[in-house]
Amino acid sequence: MNKEQFLKDGYLLFPKAIPQELLKKWQQLADNIESAALAAHALGDRMEKACVVEDKIGPRLMRFDELYLSHTQALLELLSIDTMQGIIKELSGPSSVVIYCDLLFKHQHPHPVIKWHQGSPHSRNYPYLNIGIYLDNANEDDGCLRYVPGTQDKLQPISDIEREHGWTPPGLVQQPAKVGDILVQDMMILHSSEPKRSPGARRTIYVEVRPIEGIIEQQKVSDTWLDSRKAFMATLLETNPGDYFSKEEKAFFGKPAQSSKELANLMGSDHLNPIPAVYSVMDIKGPGYPVPDDLL
Image 1 (cartoon, one colour):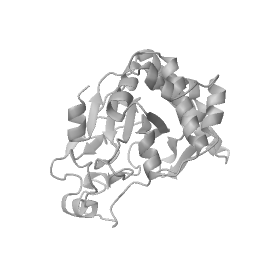
Image 2 (cartoon, one colour):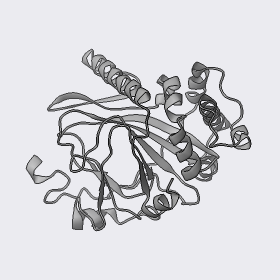
Image 3 (cartoon, one colour):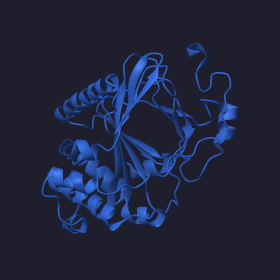
């Protein structure tokens, strides 16, 4: 694991990280979630944790939040694989917990573009990761993530960057990802995503991970919330008892939950509001930005 490269650039790709059996399982779960959300929407209802929007194409599912409440056991299996345990331990630290875990859908244009922004500004005293698990391909020039490496250490002048450079600021790197890849980014790296040109939806599971010390430093959290996150990590590490975490590090999280239902109830008993991302203070539009001219 190239931790030095991650610290320098602010992102790191792990190719072919998800075992095929797990990948197929989650692709099917994503299909099921989308079908159920759209069916509820068609009946004038709303599926809990689902966000469906209407555009000129019709209703489309944009996201389904808090997977640890509805798909607890399947999520434990996914996050307990060796690669995930290594990422959490080496890039975030042994006291890290899962804060959020959501499934996002990026559809073919027209779809809201993701303009330049930095996620969850914080003191930089502790790591804060956003881990993307790809259920579909994210190809270059097709709405894959765009990064400006090395911008994660402080807030950037986003309005000036958008006004002067649009989609192509100096140092820009497009980072494609293939189905089954894991792409880890520092929460504060400057990033964006152009419109998706190809048909269909791209599904990505996003997992936010942070050391407990960093959470407590920035946000007021209840003992109930902390206990539930520690129980999730204890259960995760028991699901695949690898050797990334020592016995002492595992003991920090306490006892695993007795069942996935008990764990889901614990996780749902308290909520922590997310730290807002930082975007431009101005609604900047120019030639080719935020929608490329050939898509207008």
